[in-house]
Length: 281
Image 1 (cartoon, one colour):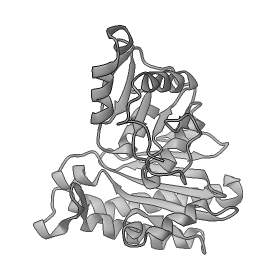
Image 2 (image 1 turned 90 degrees about the vertical axis):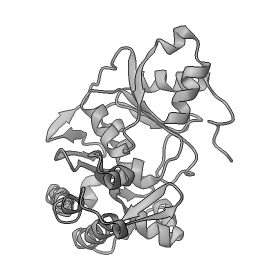
Image 3 (image 1 turned 30 degrees about the vertical axis):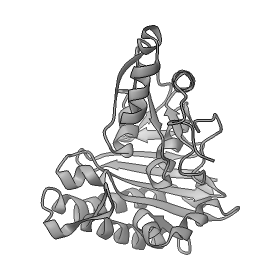
Image 4 (image 1 turned 60 degrees about the vertical axis):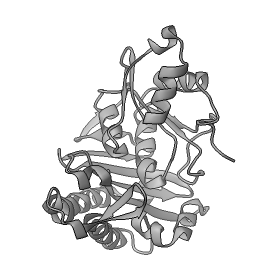
């Protein structure tokens, strides 16, 4: 299906557009923002002029690559939440765009941020791109055709021992508080980069094995979840159902680049289930 929508040439055009956007709209502003260039959408959630400029460039460019396919961008959704409905349309396509994943890092001058683009068809992710802007690393996936990091195929990932992963502060605290010493020893370092795109690339690079997220905004995770599947792992909701870009934002997400690591991460999460971690209906 990915090939029917997007041939090799078009996929390369998407990657080129992402790199062009990073060079034009993100890198010149990194560590060069004025006070007026940053504002809060809500307490603790910032947006910058770089987010807005990058999303505009990506939206225009993607509309030329696949004319008529709408773009669901993070900042556009902030203004019109009904755009999220485009993701769940049977038989239809849309782009999902995070123009600056890790905005808080970017605004603070921390070099952990990315651009994420995903193509959805019939509610399913069929192609995805994650670009680690500061390091120039690109991961690309197409459904049924595998995933590459810097042009090299990624597959047959062997979990690190003890299991290393990316876990938010609240869940990490519950692991430390609730797991027995024996079970906690199954986990090695757990941390967060505060940038989902960078975390997915670290898993593909073999430096971690899994990730857990309580909130599942599609622009953060649709492309990465596809990459985990194509690497031989998978992506599950906290309740065990298969991840979908159209799922409720609070359904939770467990991802890993191997089925073994995915099962182990799910078992560990189940062992610390509390009202804090259970998705609300």
